[in-house]
Length: 203
Image (tube, rainbow, N blue to C red; front, side, top):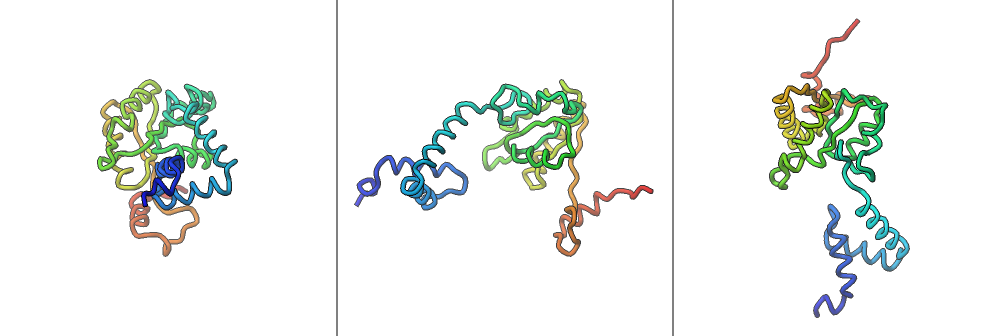
């Protein structure tokens, strides 16, 4: 028997739509759809409305490329931020983590990804030229805070080469032991990097 005879067409469309979410396969999408229709129709309507409002009203900040409801986001518009520092992160979630540390008061540029040729993400998708223009306009130090993965390191290397060729000062966040971490619980790669990036102890 055809599945279209068993499953209403609108339900099939809902299941197919839910599969656009990362990590959601056919079975998970089916369970979500059944749950929303059977147990939480009000939640389903609220989800649909929230998604419509977000897609209609959220854009990219013209300066930092982060998500924003205004042309220039509140962080970029704040006179309290240090314009001499520009921290480059991969995703908006990374920016939020940086802000939670409360140790950085500069500005940001969000790449919205990282170099990944297999996924079709190259320099154009990372808005590298936009980053260079912003850094030159601000005359700032660019801090590369991409993740310490193969793709993140490749992205940092590419951006560092591009920025330095334009005479822009570039630094990279350090990696090493986590605060409160014990040596026996740290992987050898992290410990080796912490040893390489050791600093002189000042009196």
